[in-house]
Length: 107
Length: 119
Image (cartoon, rainbow over all chains, first blue to last red; front, top):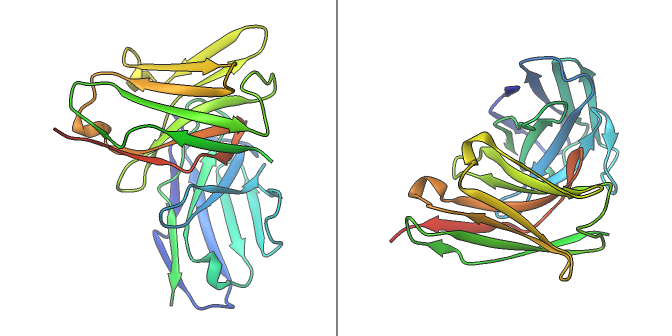
């Protein structure tokens, strides 16, 4: 099973600032990496797949990069609605595993 | 746009069977380009994939090793939905359960059902 780790666990950011979230896989997942956003009491929402492709309706301030085992989600200018927990997930191998999440909160 | 609507009880007694249903609109449970999954999330936030069903030339089922022997996922083409049954539940099965459409990644999710296992 591929183990996903994320850092930091919590990221405190002021509105308008840039947020950079990291995700690491225990083995090569190539570009088969997705990012999800989850707000309290809601289901996860797909943000990014294929490492860098934004899902339908996702604003351009969200971008993904990386390959192999190291990946990054960048939110260029945080809006109030972006404060949430972000999860990465690999889908190259079964079971498809998630990271533990990074909580982005207001500084 | 696909929508998934979950239904089922939020409280199950230990040793009994957890049953949830996921209704699909905007897609078909028989689609040959998707799979239909159940995933749960613990109170600490961790996700655990439970299993899936999909149709290609016939119906296929994949289950998490940790769930084998207790889990069953059943498609219902007449109602365009799929169901989860988890038998012999214990308090460790308390979690938020989600259904999700899979196109390699999980692009659509149900609203989630908090299921508590308690007497």
